[in-house]
Image (tube, rainbow, N blue to C red; front, top):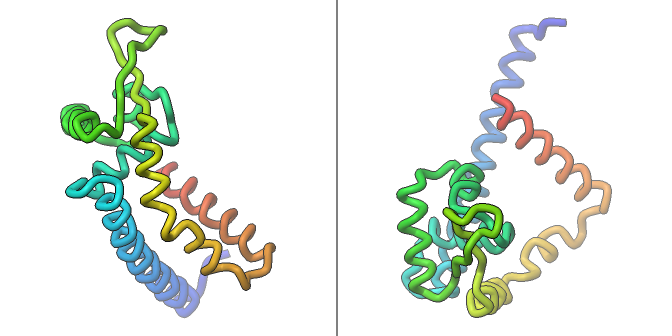
Length: 154
């Protein structure tokens, strides 16, 4: 069933409003990520923080797998990883499955710094939605996953 012109316009306006809200949310998260990066290691840029936290979540990841996952150029990613190593946040070990590559892991010091950086705002999301019904939290999670899945299929 085709939408009427008014319904189509209303849908477009609603999607634009949603895009604006996502833009505002992203800006707020970028600010938080910048603060976290600075707490982890003064001078660490948000992009380096994102690489570091991805390595922490995917402990024992190869550079190639990380580049694919993050959709980054391997050269740029290699430079970022060298910086993270120099800061004592990441280490490399030989990949037992492939002697030509290395596995990237967070160092114990890196994990401790990450935990300390996150501690001041650990309950931020929990506090923000503490009055929400559990069904709303589940619905938002489901809808965000569905949106992410449909965007990545394109």
